[in-house]
Length: 127
Image (cartoon, rainbow, N blue to C red; front, side, top):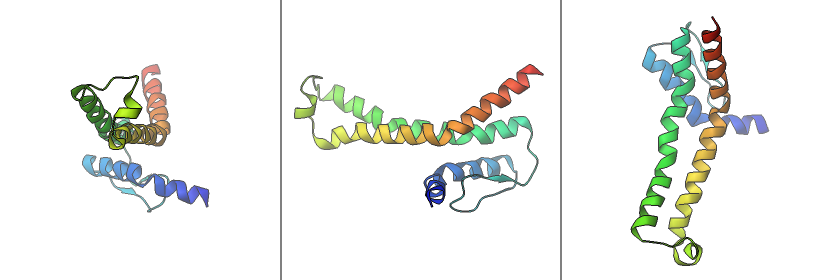
């Protein structure tokens, strides 16, 4: 049951893998709720590297948007750090929490992709 729940949490991540395959013109298979995308066509190492890292490089800038907005408003409103929690509105504090949640999602969902990409790169460099 927990494995199936994890699969549904990873749907946005896996759909970005599918999009990467579509961009390079390779066929793939994905079942909604699954935790991986199956390659139906043979990929070159460069294409495989692209497909691995595509979700990370798409989701990371999106995850940093709430932090950028939070910093901009923090500087613009001239909040001080020692009384921020008592002065700032809750929606502004929630931007920081949203950034932390989104960043945690990106890092946790892309962890193994990053690990496999590093292994692929080290394997390519060793040859």
